[in-house]
Length: 124
Image (cartoon, rainbow, N blue to C red; front, side, top):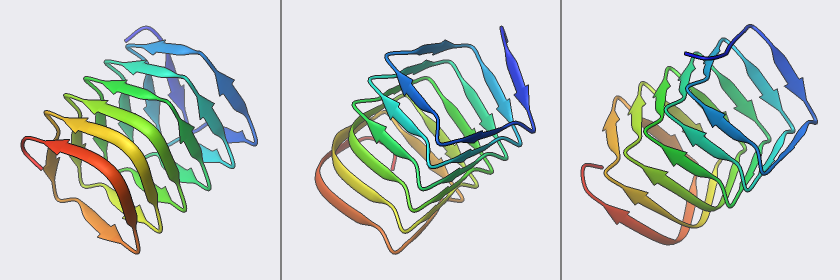
């Protein structure tokens, strides 16, 4: 891992066109954050909370989500490629367009979610 964020809170931050490569987020909170055209490559999210976050045109490549909570999150045109969801909760989320390619889910819970125009392949 190149960079580790431990117990950090991001409030109202906008990430535009950023690439996160091999980053580890541990116990981090993202509150009202926007990710626009961001790439996550080989990133690990452990015990992270996403609250009221927007993912717009984001790519998740080879990412691991472990014990993560997505609360009131919008996924707009997001691509999940070779992603692993382990013990993840999706609460009140929206999936608008996007793709799930080679995704693996273990112990995932969806509550009050909407999905439109999704392309899902393999292992959900």
